[in-house]
Every structure is written in structure tokens, then in C-alpha cells.
Length: 123
Image 1 (cartoon, one colour):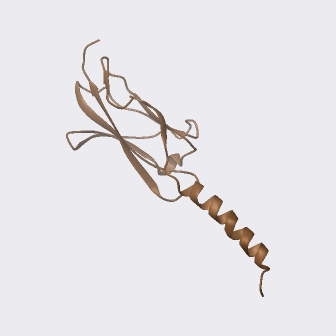
Image 2 (tube, rainbow, N blue to C red):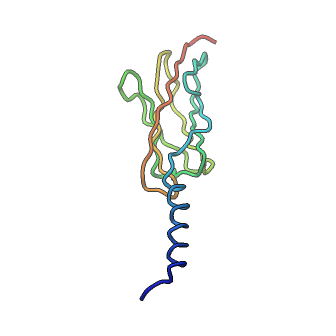
């Protein structure tokens, strides 16, 4: 069975438009803490907001210091569709990295990133 060339050309054009959109990298729109932030009073809430919905079940947050895992956080499944949110114990003063690893709802590829921050311990 052969398809008319115009139908085949239309399908290929549609795939060219749709495929790149789903393969784009995930973008971070906001976070707590913000990248390079120096926090005076340590908090226990951490979040990363993305530019599209994420798969909360297969996404992870963790806190690192000097290349060592400090705390693996459990994301709240009932947070907004585009937000990865978790609580952690209060951290001591020092430099840390909030590491995120997420999947979008349309892709199976996991994307990762780091948000460096510091806690000064001064109010």
C-alpha cells in the first residue's frame, strides 16, 4: 500500500515539528534556595520549579557537601505538577549543592542539575 506523496510529506513535516519539542531540555524557572544564594537562617524546605510537568514518582532531590551525600530527600507527590518539593533536616553552616534528577511526563530520559548554595549561620 502506498501513501500519496502529499500525505507522507505532511506527516513528516508534523513529526519534524513535534519531535524536537518533546526532546528539549527541561528548564529550571525557580528554586529554593536560589543558585549561589547565601542563606543566613537555615530552612528545611527545598523546591525546584520547572517549565513543564515532571514525573514526581521517578524524580529525586538530594543535598551534597564536598562530594558527599548529606541527605536524600523524599519529594512530596502532592506538590504542583511542575514543582519538585521536599523537606530536610536543618543543615549546619557550610557550602552545599542541591542536586535534582527528574523526568518529564512525556520523556523517559532523566535530566539532572545542581544548585549550589551556602548557609552562613548568621541571621
